[in-house]
Image (cartoon, rainbow, N blue to C red):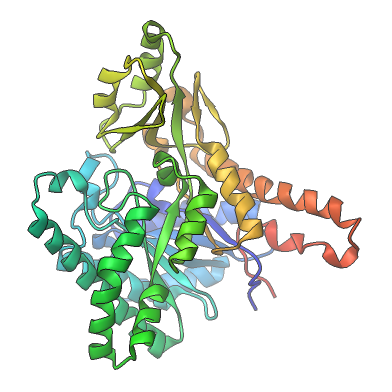
Length: 437
């Protein structure tokens, strides 16, 4: 029986280069058995699996999936979450805005996502929910010149395609008893960037379009159709991305809860943060330090806050550096998933505190059991920040566990004044793999 009070904690395997199933499986064999030995020797350990479209097709050929299931059982590993955001190549090439291709206006995105759900349904242990994170519909700069009719078409087609996935997930539930949800991941310059835009999409597009379609296709009542939408389409709360929107975790959690939108997965990630000195002439050295992070593989949007609290967004760090001497700018947050276990980077900072705050909030309001570290930029970090990958992954997970346990250490001490029955089950919060007997 699985410990329902505990978390499933892992890291996302999108950090490992490799687009074919053979490459993915080799990475899993290389990194997970030794990591499990160190982090969870006595309990099964979870995997956050990323499969490209190519790998998702290849694993379904021959006996690859059956072989993988046997290996998972032998190694006491399990898959509970998948990353279905990047469809194609994600390493050793210029990704940038291509990460959004194909977007949710296309059938290719639907087919890929349903394929991942079918794979996860085979891998997911009984009695456990599964989740698949996905793109925030599309990429705003592609639609900069779109008129009202075009934008309506984008939202409509995206909603219709998500409803097709809901239909498939509902059928999987009927056939296997397993609940799998698709988790939309807002991010900078995505069509959905923050909680306000997510809530608006649900209310104005996804719910009305989905309710009508599901009543017709699945024979559900209107209430059942709405419930299905909110069960099978949830949110991936990437802490880095919400920090870039300058949304405080507690406020975002409250708005999503009020709108009835569930958080299916929290991706634990930190953004690069830079406090800009008032003397603009001294920002040259800061620009040099920031330029080390302006690499060519991924998009590194910058969101600037000025002294009146107004936000300005730049599409990539290279463009933002041209404006670093703006007199009224006071802070930059950069879309670069820096490591969690340190808050200082050669004079720069991170939004690590937002991650710590999310972990504190989870103790009071356990909105999800799925926690996934997503520091995927190891390969493109400045040389002096690169460390052994296995040790870096372990340090990330240990930092998360330490921060979770800090809260429980405090509660243990205060429980002495409340009686022994108030002591929380700390055993459930000390290992990444949450399975137990």
